[in-house]
Amino acid sequence: MIERYTLPEMGNLWTETYKLKTWLQVEIAVCEAQAELGYIPAEAVEEIKAKANFDPQRVLEIEAEVRHDMIAFLTNVNEYVGDAGRYIHLGLTSSDVLDTALALQLVASVNVLLERLEDLIQAIRYQAQQHRNTVMIGRSHGIHAEPITFGFKLAGWLAEVLRHRDRLVRLRQDIAVGKISGAVGTYANIEPHVEALACQKLGLQPDNASTQVVSRDIHADFVQTLALVAASIERFAVEIRNLQRTDVLEVEEYFSKGQKGSSAMPHKRNPIRSERLTGMARIIRGHAVAAIENVALWHERDISHSSVERVIFPDACILTHFMLVEITDLVKHLLVYPENMARNMNVYGGVVFSQRVLLTLVEKGISREEAYAIVQSCAHQAWNKPDGNFHDLIAKDSRVTQVLSPEEIEACFAPQHHLKHLEQVYQRLSI
Image (tube, rainbow, N blue to C red; front, side, top):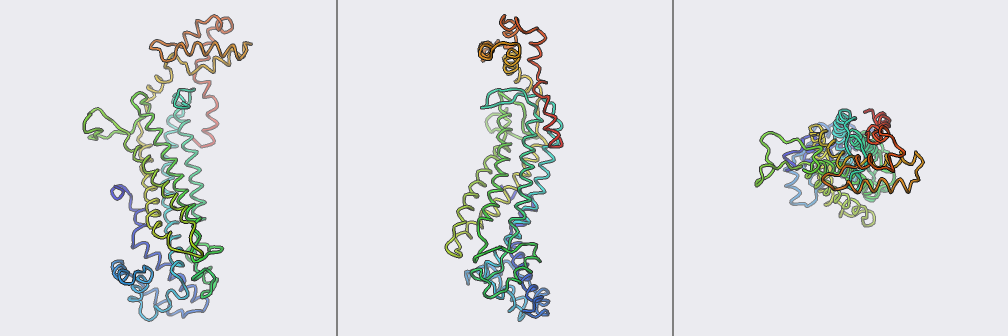
């Protein structure tokens, strides 16, 4: 399913060919650095750059025999380069290349995710602008609370996604770490100057203190950040699912021409995209757990993390990318039903305006305890009754009419009171 939906821009970053390209990129950067520092002949580096290549299928053939991916890769590269190939991988250990190249893949992935996140930001901002005054009921514990607007609900989504943009920008810098420090990170067979220069060429920073590998807390942070992005997308998707329920039906996923909702029930219009996003978020959270468990390696390094990362990095990046594309399209084409929002808000005669009645009575000098008892009594008489009408009960209650005029009672049921400060929120978010 992922192959069907994933745009090539992310999927291409996690192919075997792209991975080997980053390996070669690191090897050449190290050769260039060593040549500039006078450790290897400059003409050998030029020959390496001119001839170096690889064949992914040939690498697999060699690996089947030697059972070591880096040796297989280097063997294949040297088949192209010839004698100058003896300067490739000079003083390095496999993880120098693997971890540094992985940083390049992760940085490239973050760049793509930031582009897609920007698309989502614009989609949410547009819908929030369109519905800044579309009044609906706010809910707490799933129960009607007080009026809000749909634009205000989306403002909360926008603020959350903007925080994710900041997190990804920070993550792009934190993950851009390479290491060219040798077998246990002591630089015994390669100079720190080579690492610094090679990393500079690759747009990376040298790890402050690597062992044989870059410590996996950095990578755990990467996957946890993606899991947090996925969690927010899940929050939006769950909200859409709840608002699409038949008894609510305030918003709905776009239902395309020819689409079918059920093999048995022709009337069905199911929130399948939101449900899919909810499920995918669970997978990425699971990957975050695996990434955290990768932090504890034996001594200076083992390879227990390697098999895990071959799954979780491409999977988390591709899934997060897909989720961003999917939720953006969903938000752009979301069907919004203001009439249903108004109907739901005014159920039981506007019982959701109970706090406004309570506070108005208190302002008129009635004790809070007495005012609460009056309002709660009327509210509970109206609640869940086919003909329940909180407004009429309040308007006829002598304890209320003794202190409130008909105009004051009506003012308690005006939703505009609840929306008067929302403009400040919209301004903060440029809505």
